[in-house]
Structures are given as structure tokens and as C-alpha cells.
Length: 616
Image 1: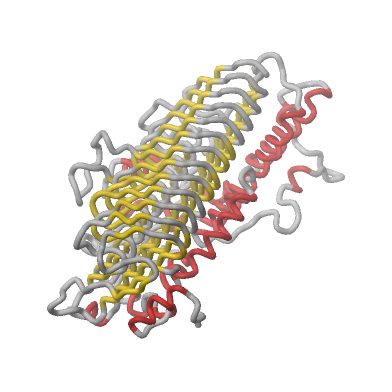
Image 2: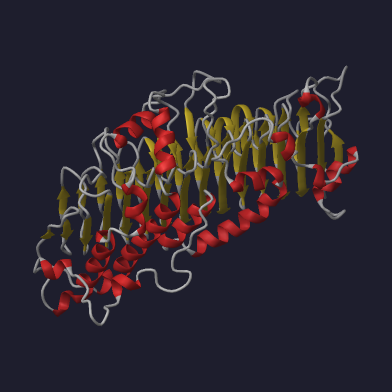
């Protein structure tokens, strides 16, 4: 039971309720929709929305401790899609590939090919050989996971379904996922990431050759670069590139047809990662496979089209960039995007620029987790909205961004009945004065049994969007934005924003501190609509609330008075903590409490609960 000092109970006590009443009836929810791909984390948050702030703190702490630990980030992402696997928890998962048995000498691909001879290359040889022994093992977890679905033509069908919005391969997608062993894929990806991480960690102490060494294998070529500027340009992705420094250029698709694994480990330099083919995944992206980039230092530029820079479709794509002022530019399913798989982009430090079109920057589709993790630096996140390429149904003037911490599913209750519960999309930026720009469905947004989160740490940040943005969502989602501190500016123009929930969705904005400015449209600042729950909580600071007159805002709710929906609650909750605040509405003010005026004054709906409170 919530304590009397809890601000939610204080606000709800005006209508005879407590914080424990601020939830959805899960038994009633079960009668609507939901399938075998509904995530446990969705159910947890949908049932207990007020646990979100505590979980946000735990998530931020965990991710902040593992910015450059790719195996742990993969374990984190896997857990979000009901695969709580952590390889290496007990013992060394790579022991059989790293420790020589008494009677069986370990295979060495460098020794077999008679390259990198001499004691000065010993560390480099050991790292390459460890990686190769793992991926060459037919019984390795990742190979077991994808071999059953690695059929000719399946990648093309998945590509067409997800990139071109084609429904003709719907049954094929469902069939393939039934055959994919997600547990082995997540565990196997952690093993491969561990081998690459160990290689990356030894690079500062490795000696590199003075010319590019090529090692041919049955799974694709391995290339060892020099400490100087190297150009790696190929038709398809090599199995592995290890480079010792310099301003390098990597130019190829992310697909390796010999074996669905491709990796790059780069020590330093201002590098360019370029993927120009629009019909194939790019560097750091995978379809029924795995693609990993680890770049330790430099001001790098990543450019690609679709499924790159940390994009996983029935697979795992990851980019781990340790340091530098980096630029990322892509279109779809990229920069931390997962659909039936995992997509991770982690950038530890630097003033970074991320530009995308849609389905990116922390986008999780069905049984997928998309994660963007950014450490220190003033970063800019842009989802294109000046050039119209995917007009939203809500307004033909702006794009469906689906970016910056968005969970999304396939709603088909009005189509063929093949609805797919959505995934888990997360953008976590730890510090810096950051800027977020997008169109619709962005910045901590969720749709159709999914979870979308944007967590921002310290810094003076700005958020700008159109509709369904900034802790808002629709149709059975959990949408959450948590800003941990700083003087922030929130701007949304059209509808449903800044802590607003529509149609059994949790829309929650938690602003922990700073003098903040909110310029908002209808349905905002703790606005609930059609059995949704809108929650807004600004803890401290002198805040300005520029609201639209007569709108459902500042703790108001629009209920439905017919059918079963007529007896289920719709909540709008607004809470402002300490500070001298500025309001436009005459029914809200400093050091006061209010019951939000009903949307229909002549016939108020008793299940539409709107409350607000401003504390000293």
C-alpha cells in the first residue's frame, strides 16, 4: 500500500483513490488481445506503471556500468525479450576454445595459413584463432540457432516484408520464427561478442604488420590491417577485419553469404564505415546472422541505408564505439533496432550526431529489442521530418518516425487477426546537453503491447516532436520518458504528448529536476483518453506550462461511457513538486490541488478520473 506522503495517493485521494488504483485490470486486458509473443516486461509495467521510475534508475545504472561491455549489453537486451541468458555467469564460456587439452592441440587458422609469424604477433594470433575456433564449431550456440532457418531466399523474404511493408510473406515470417532458437541465438551472440571483446581489449598492446594480411577460410576471409590508413572495399562483408590504427575506410554490405557472421575490430583513427547497397543490410546489421563492429577510438563516420549500425532482423547487429565525436546516418531499421532479434548501438563518449528516417534509434519490433546507449557528450538525435517520405495517418504533413525509444507491434484485429505483440525499444543517454527531434511516434513511445523508453541523464536537453511523443502512446502500450536532471525544453505540436495515454496505454513522463518549459498540445501533461492512463510528474524546479486552452491536459481524462469500456477507468494524473511554476489554466496553480474539469460538463463520466496537484 502506498504511504500517505506519496504524491500519487495525495492527488488521487481527492476522488477517494490511492496510487494502488492507478493500474489496468489485467484480467479485463486479457479479453482484448495479446499473443504468444507478448513480453513479460510489458505485462509487468502495464500492470504496475509506478514501478517504472525505479526500473529506470536500475536500467541506467546497469547500462552505465557496461558501456563498453558488449556481452553484458547483449544479455541485457536478451532479458528484455524474455531470454534471461547470461553466458559466463559461472565459469568461462570460451574455455573449450581457449585452453588446450592435454591430448588435443587447439586448431590455429593463422598457423594453418602460415601468417603472422613471429613472437611479436602472438597476441594478435591468439585473438584471431580464438574467434575462429568458436565460429568454426558446428555445435556452437549461434550456429545451432540459425542453421535451421538459413535457407536460400529466406533473407530476401524477410527483407521484403520488413523494408517494403509487404504482407505476402506473413506466414513465412511466423514459420521462420517458430524455427528460430532465440535462446541459443542470444547466448551464442554473447559468446561471439566475448571473443571479439577480448580481441579488442588486447589491440593496444598488439604489433600489426606493415601490409594488409589476408587469411582465407571456409567461412569468409579474415583481414589484418596496418597501423596506417587502409581501404577495405569488398563485394560482401569479410568474416573478420582487425585493424591497428589509421584513418581507415570500410566499404561493403553487412552480409556474408558464406557464413552469416561478420565482424570488425578497429583500434583507432577517424574511420569511415560505408554501406551503399540499398538491397542488403549494411555494416553492423544482420538478417538471419550476426554483425558486430567494435571501434576503440577516433571521430568516426557511419553511413548506410537499411538495417545497419546496430540492426538485427532474425539476428543480432551491434556497434560498440568507445570514444570520439561520431556521425551516424541511416534510413530504416538501424541505430539500435531489433525485430525478432537484437540491435545495439553503444557510444561511450563524444558529441555524437545520429540521423535516421524511421524504425531506428532504439526501436523494438515484435520479440525484438533495440537499444541505443550513449555516455558523455552533447548528442543530437534526428529522425527526418522535413522531407516527407512516410506520411502518418494522423497528419499527412509529418513522418512516422518510430524512433528514439519506441516499441511497436503489428495490429491486425481489424485485418487478418495475425496481431503480433510489440517489442522493447530503449534509448538511454547518460549525460550531456542533448537534442531530440522527430515526427510522430517517438521519444519514449509505444504501440500495440510493446514497451518504449527514453532515459536521459544529466544535462539541459530539448525534445521536439509532433504526435505520440515524449512519453505517450496508443493501443495497449507502455510509453515512458524519464529525464534525470537539467533545465529541459519540451515541445509538441499536434496531439498526445508529454505523459499521455490512449486506449489502454500507459503514457508516462517523469521529469526529476530542473527549470523546465513545456509547450504542449491537446492530450498532454497527464492526459488520459479512451481508457488510457496519462501520468506526468515533474519533481522540482520553476516550470512553465504553456498549454492549449480547453485541452485535455494538466490531469484530465476523456472516458468512454458505453459497453465494458464504460465501467473501466481512464486516468489523467498531473503532479508538480517544489518550485514556483507558471500556468495558463485558471483551475491549476502553485501549491494547490484540483480535480480536472470533465470533458463533458453536462454529463460527466464517473470512470474518467482526472486529478492534479502542485506541491510547495
